[in-house]
Image 1 (cartoon, helix red, strand yellow):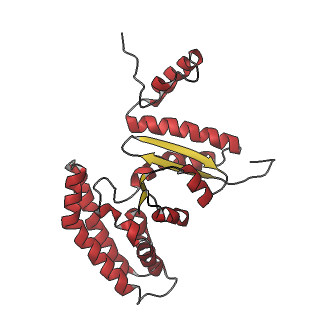
Image 2 (cartoon, rainbow, N blue to C red):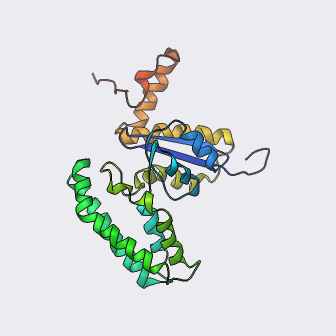
Image 3 (cartoon, rainbow, N blue to C red):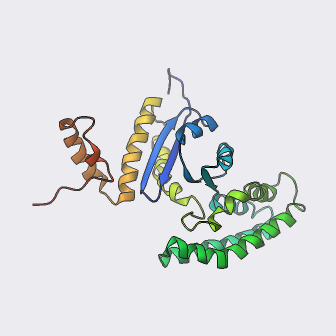
Length: 252
């Protein structure tokens, strides 16, 4: 609440799988200006859902903007009741695509080997999906759920096919969705943050605990040790206390 009135805000989440870190940021606004601010100076691969504010990054020559097939698939899942036949066709293709990704994960394939698998087996499925989308978009009712699902894919086809060019790119951004889950579950319990400042503090806590989880660190043990040690340190002497550098104390 602010001045006694409820207000809404947005928790933005960035996840770096290679570094096994996650960062939560609270902002009152949910628009492209915030996205640009949070990603200012970033160079590399950026994987996002289909939120329109991310479209600008597709045009950035220093960023490889990859889409999320989990979000693309969701539209067809939501279309089953109104157009089961078409939805089932797309979902069957997606089942095969995600099964291939599961095989690669279980086999612990390296990025080059995962890319080879995708080019051999996933690429034909993607081509089959594209041909079907191009054909069916002419036959579905405008504004229907199935039309929206097809349009989502066609409008983001460039981003949705980036995973076929780099074995390090995931087929979806489910990894960051997993990081968000504790917030989504907790929100149902506490409902309100209390104030914008409380939401910012919540973002800090979620960042620390989420990163600890990704690094395989006991967050309670980490916070207990770091909060005890920090009063003894100066601001420029905390690098070893960062989660990725921290080492649990040796047991006697």
